Image 1 (cartoon, one colour):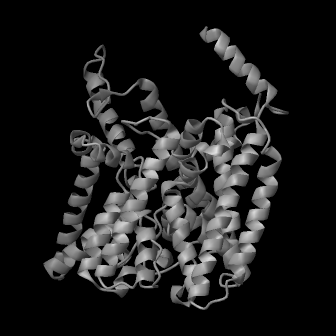
Image 2 (cartoon, rainbow, N blue to C red):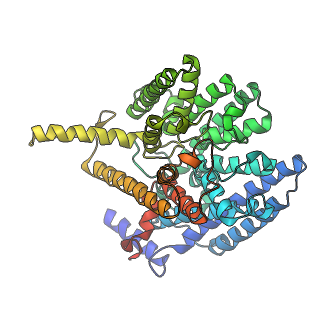
Image 3 (cartoon, one colour):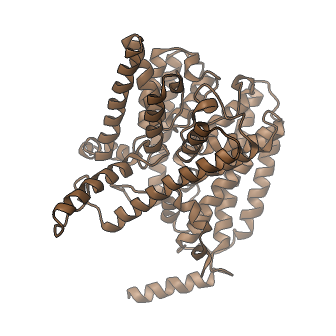
Length: 502
């Protein structure tokens, strides 16, 4: 019976594929639907411009262009039969193409309004937003109109949970094997997956995400932010994006209350969202006993204390040292990138410490980028297991996570990911140096782009911007942000020869 079903599925796939064996109609349907969805958010943002008596023309034109292109791509596939089986190849192409097109068309409002007139700058700003990186080429953010400020923040909010996950929640008419799209968009080592129908799961994730956003908006208004700034910072906080409406970032308000609330929600955004599902279901043990979560919180605590006593030793008041330390540690480790101080001014030791935090970052299944804490934990455990195997060659010593033994294949894929991640950092470091960036600036730029963190070193530190880098470096970093957001394999597998073979 199983063999008969497999043959029927293969027959159905063969009927619906052309050329290379890829179902391009499905790919076009996904990409076109996402552009149509993006146009709705662009049109919605034009309403903000109208409310603040600004010209909405750039948003209206951008929305029309985006909608027209989306429909032109998607409509020819409308009457096509729903495809029940799609391959990993189609998933990877659909997700990568969607993120790229979303970035291209998302930059139109900046270009058409001339508020960011250069294509390299507009693409960089949009890519940084949609990937929740938070790096910026702007040197005076307050010069932007209210509509453009909100559009930057909205890009981050949409990218935080993932535009593909969003599509699964509200566009089930796309058809196809939704689970494969979800896995391609949120690839990487995960654990304790709750797997009802993927569309239902996407709705629950976005329900949690939206609820947290609304709660944060309310709390920020209590701290003195006006409703516009509260909405914008709620979008960029829960998405761990880091864009602000002020050039001085959170330091503009100089409020202990606001910094505390944002610290809490940066941590919330960097925790595996599936744990919140278990928490809502009353499965408290799964939340509080999660090994990755415990490591994540311990790293924040230890690094905050180290930085606190280091700053205190530099003749700062203890309370001020702790306030600076915990905010910057959380901001960088969660890949948010808000700033209340510049760690590059504190000394070389702090640059190294924050560089390590920029590499590891938050939890799997969260809005954070980076290597992820869970991979670092497994890597450390596997290293100690290797020592044990050297002493006991015949012993079977598995790597355990949350009490479960990980298979050799999982550990092997993790090692491959870590190698590729480190290789890309060093390769990009060299590329950015050749593009004219200083030695340490290039290192910081490479790490912050692939990890989707935001600030770098030198001229690109939390108190600076990326305005001074070359156009080539901006294009390269923009693509690097997208690759990092898709956790490397999903995007780079497209460039392997075997991927395109039937």
